[in-house]
Length: 252
Image 1 (tube, rainbow, N blue to C red):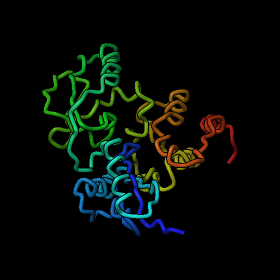
Image 2: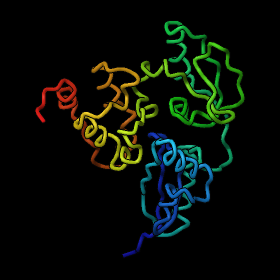
Image 3: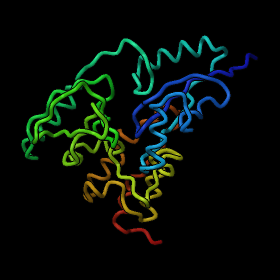
């Protein structure tokens, strides 16, 4: 039997793929060590350590019999996901028209100007994260739906729009002292989130709304299903039980 000691792996930040790699042994552990050769990866480590942001979730994808095959598979995955922390050529700036159009639909009712056209090489879901989306330089109006991030060329959407996008709940979920970022992602987001509800802790989305239907939509939506395709047994989320917990129908 041929030994398959090489493998590919992928790291997610708040459900967004940010790094693809290949290696052997414990190579994948560099993604959350703070001492990786990638400064961009290390930033996520320090974001979690000092700002209680979510750490990266890293999954081994597939094993290979030799390094060459693993390297070829790595290149395919990088081309597919265009992760933020991989240095690779061939990327071009583009606009996520569906997301920008949807933001535009809510601008009038929320009292904002129409959105500027943002051009980026990366996943536009970053707009809803504390880190923000790395974009081409853009001048934002005073009443823009966007705001500048903490770093140059990074743009975030204003919190007023969170309630309009329950499908991106994991990207903008609130990490409080009660809801530790590292604990939250330890066993996949869905199961930990249900445990938080069971213990009656401050809800990670209470800064957006307490509307039960909205919360169920957010918690059961696609944002929390990012890892389901990696496993043959997707994690079950009991919507009925969740509603009962929120309504106080269960005894301690």
